[in-house]
Image (cartoon, rainbow, N blue to C red; front, side, top):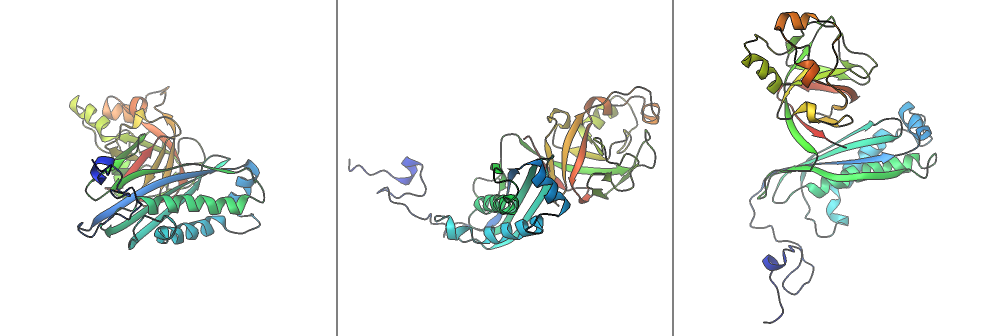
Length: 313
């Protein structure tokens, strides 16, 4: 025995058989599409967040400055994380949003077609966004703190898909809006979500805690198997999804859509005091049992077929 251990024995890919730090050789790997999403958040006092949300911080537009800082940092990841590889990034997306009265949240996604992953680029982007946000608010609240920086998901490469504990990936199957409350909604494939309102032109929209209603197609299928003739919108849901058991998400969970819309779960199910038009048309209503309600934290367009990540905070 010479006391040397192989990389395979040690499990440490950044050390050679002598225990010396090295950069992993990826020259023989085939390039694949790499995608990684990270999350980070900043806690600050209500005064700082109020000034931030009103655009009255002395340093200026913290949202724009933090987004630019995050993108710039992602592109320079290999310069200050020494054993990472320079990656030709195809895209860096940074979505920031107020999260309650004393918190800012951030999802950052990095995409590249390369031989190595972009997990560090996503995490550097999310962290830098919050570091820059701290710099913008520290004049008001030096006690602000960054928490919960973590990788949420990654795809590509030999290891394939990975998802963090407390996260789930789903898909938007259909959207629906209506002009009246308590009535079935009209299905559509694209809609716009507005902050503090909900789906544009929907009767349930407004500055309240049930701006957007969501229901899984799995729940709709249960009703179909009972012989009910129901379709998307029959239960007055705004968004029909697949892949995630919505009613098992805790209140406070985030729903991040890949085009940047962010919602937060505010209520699971509801109590129906009177039978509405939905009940009389369908013969039953699964929405009070298995539907969820959200508020919109970051707005924008949403489309059928779009993926989303549900994250338990």
